[in-house]
Length: 328
Image (tube, rainbow, N blue to C red):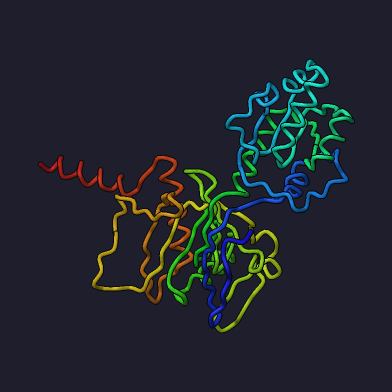
């Protein structure tokens, strides 16, 4: 489901959020996890998944349905299947009927467990799809949860350019026409990769990680004033583009203001916030003669160096301090 609506205003993209609940099609999960469908007569095109967590219905098989979250994907492993085999047939049918009455999105049997024909018939009657996978239960659950957290992550769309510079995701922001796309094009020529231009869709996949991607409609395109739209993938090859990238560093471009004091040491980090996550941010003043691509490259390498434990500004500060102490 789209969270934003694209508006075009004189070549500039403006975005507006819609309040909605994010969903993912069950069919997409089936294709991603290569699940075997045991209820092909059911139409799964309209079934949506809204929860990132999955559930192993052990307590439900024992008859305890209090606080049962029926919106989750249900996963049955060896333990649940062994318990089902030990139940008397009438009791087992009653429990499964009650579980299926909750209209769960689907039930997945792991480790290639054989699904009994009676259960397939009952699930088809109740309209609940049954699937099977050869993966171990824990591994399957971990992969599904990881994938759903990305697909159902809260998201926003902002105006900017996202590029992969030496493996670091650099989000370039600034007023329209300040030179973001031109800087990105120069970075591409220098061997770096474009993720998205003009519109950046940001997903919060965890409290530490933000993932940026491009809307399908503008993927791999860059708008250059005076030239128009260019296809980066076609012009520079597939090695010059990337579909997704974590956002590690934000660079805000702004017009040079001689009255404003700019950070010239970098001892204290500045941050900007997206969806509650803080990201290191640098404000770069723009002036004729300043090579933006080299500045962005240097900022990315310096950020990487800081992550590895070396801070050039701190090293200079320590040298100056030690030198002053020696003179005293």
